[in-house]
Figure 1 (tube, one colour):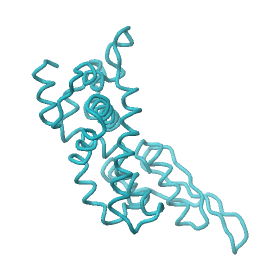
Figure 2 (cartoon, one colour; figure 1 turned 60 degrees about the vertical axis):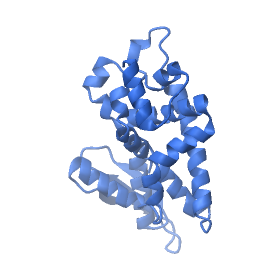
Figure 3 (tube, helix red, strand yellow; figure 1 turned 90 degrees about the horizontal axis):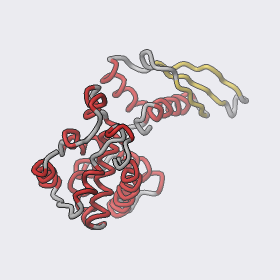
Length: 229
């Protein structure tokens, strides 16, 4: 990217970093440079950015939902910090176009992969935090997570609903659930359920009812596919 391109990105996000090298590192995917010495990628920044995002979101939820206990806050928190949400923000600021990555990764669609975009967004948050402080990072998160914050008046969809939406969008199929084991006494049964989507390997879940086991299986598949069940 040229200096003008970095300036354009900073205008879109509303933050100007003093350390340009830090911004460049946040935009550098692990594939860039093929491991040559001196090329620093964004993985360490991603680690920090994930924690900064979590801290800011936890405080926003704590302040906004005074009547909710931990059980009510946790699913909302997970919905706010998951990779898909970070990837949505990355797309909103056209972060994919700014990323430095190998030619092969770019040609394989790397600039649109939710995992890469989500990681880069977290790295960008870390760069803002390190360069400009927590207040600037909070301002960035408040601005670009506003849509998610406004949509939290209702509890996020349960894993089965999320899996069905994803499966229909990705494979044009609905998940199939099958009880593979039932044990325990009648008053305290335990179910193991297997869920399959298309040609993906099945995922399993256990619970005290068939419905709970199906939810656990759906959550397991979502997590395995990097979708934060």
